[in-house]
Amino acid sequence: MTADKLTDFQWKTKIQLFKPEEFMGSRIEGLPRSSMLPWLDERVIWAITRLRLLTGQRMTPSPAPGAIARTWKTKSQHYSIGRISTAVDLFILEGTLQTVYEAALKLPEIGGFGAYPEWKPHHGVHIDIRPRKGRLHTWMAENKEGEQIYSALNWERVEALTAPLHAHKTQS
Ligand SMILES: [Zn+2]
Image (cartoon, rainbow, N blue to C red; front, side, top):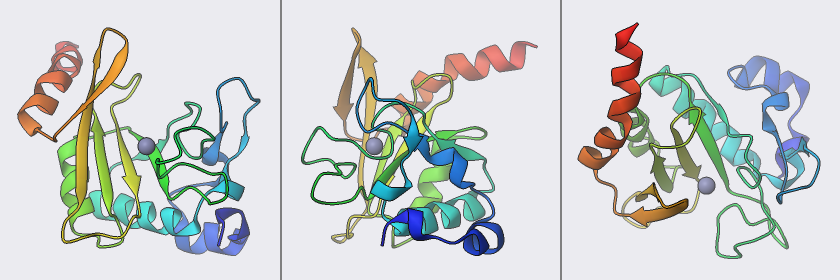
């Protein structure tokens, strides 16, 4: 079922921690922003609601094109032609990416986790609901000369990339 079928009652009483208006975006760069809920699997909403509850950390979908559903990269969990997106990219508005990861590990409905320590203005994660094959599928990405380079998830590296942000925050 697509997430636009969720009722006001479900949003207000069961989901609570996210609002439908947060799921605005575009499926490709250049298109006007609109609700991405018609292209998103509702199970993603339930999964991130549990993630939000378990972490206690505020998070919200990234407004970047393709952050919820996209029309390019056919192998992506966000791909939404002939299927619906099973993923969302989230800005993590407080706390660390590692605590989000630890919570994701505990939620069997989450099958994919990507760490994006350098996203601006907030560091972020990719969450998807692919079936787990024995373990959570993980990766990280960092910016090199304007490109996102993917590698195995390494918390020392994530920390190093996030550190300047923390250092800046503690100065005030
Ligand atoms: Zn993603």
